[in-house]
Image 1: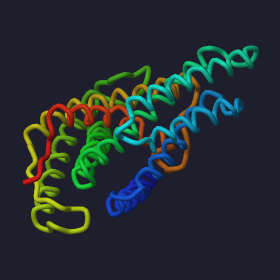
Image 2 (image 1 turned 90 degrees about the vertical axis):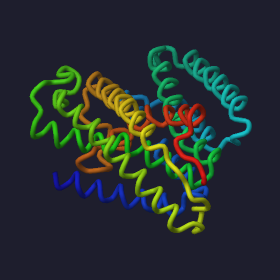
Image 3 (image 1 turned 120 degrees about the vertical axis):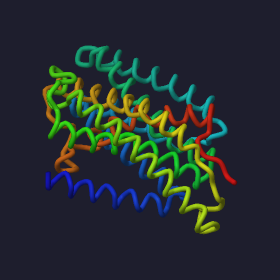
Length: 285
């Protein structure tokens, strides 16, 4: 418990830095760093780091995606994804006696997941501006981390019915429900505080406009985002179980590695990008 609290405090300090410098390229560099660290952990779990060229190509792909021009993303992403596929098959042909096709498929799948998920965060910032992008980022991380905290405490004290005992024995149905409720409450509180703060300090830094937030819409969307986060968490658990590891890393004591901390976020960020394009949750007054 103590380690989890200390690690969470460190994570909040890092989040504070991101909030302060959200309108700079620091966000891109931090996203690239976390993405590469998660990729390293994923490849290490599957014993793929010994294929250095494979690891390097996938890492370069992820970083390039995060620094693409948002106006050319559709074409650039298609070309880079095609090039990645070609290079992966070249490596498969070269190392066919050691490298298996399922390992190549695993490498492609994880590279695409990490690149797309983190780039959705960047896209939200670039297409809505730093103020609105910050709001969506808080909802994305809140949907994952509020739910994780709520599920942990509710599951610890009230959990009786196992959710997926063969995949993640500690997860319970009660924890899932508690996590969803906590995430909804947490995101609604974030909305109220963010709206009040923006309307109070405008203009200040990159906070340029007073805003209005559709809180009922946020409350409606959050449970779906939370369920996607649970899907991401369980998917990561399946990978860890099949490769016989407890955590992807130990960079955050009590929480594991970067992938352990961001596995649920990876599934949530694209959802909020889709929602932004269909039904914006915030607008300037």
